[in-house]
Amino acid sequence: MEKLWKFAKRPRIEQRDNDYAHRSSSENYTVIQQNEKSLQIAREQGRYGLQETQTHLHLGDCYLSSNRNETAIQHYQKALEIAREQGYKLEEGQAYLGLGYCYRSNNRNEIAIQHYQKGLEVAREQGYKLQETRAYLELGEWYRFKNWNEAAIQHYEKALEIAREQGYTLQETVSYLLLGYCKYIYIQQ
Image (cartoon, rainbow, N blue to C red):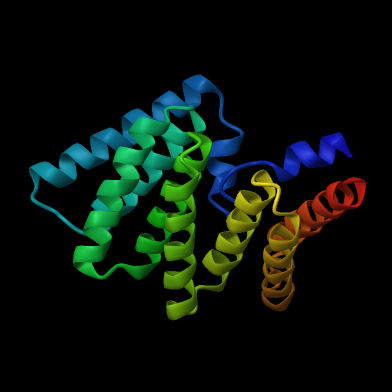
């Protein structure tokens, strides 16, 4: 069970997580350098838009996986700012969820839940089912860490429902693992 739990605890449950979760420190450093260079070129050429937004999201992910949360927060906030100005709803939701995770990691729980809820709201409004699933998983984690197991279970079940409907096998697997763990803890109390 402990091995499965370690798998389930991985942050940022979405496809691009695989890009960051299995990198060594040197590989992550190289990716950060490449993204920083991309950002520099975009700025020099006056390109302010989707490419810059996505680069900030990628940098946020990289810094987050390197445990540099404050730098990750800066990049997610910049991505959020641009996404909101330009109307990039998918990236806006991703930035909210990334910020939520960073704040939760820094024990800034009230700010974290606000960002998770905003990310969920954007995902639901836009019909972004993968992002909605991820938001429910992240909210479930937040509630579980607060020892509000009933609320956590409700969010995991909602994530599972969407994952099954949409065929998101990774999120379905993670939902089952987290539900099992949370129900086990709930029974033990």
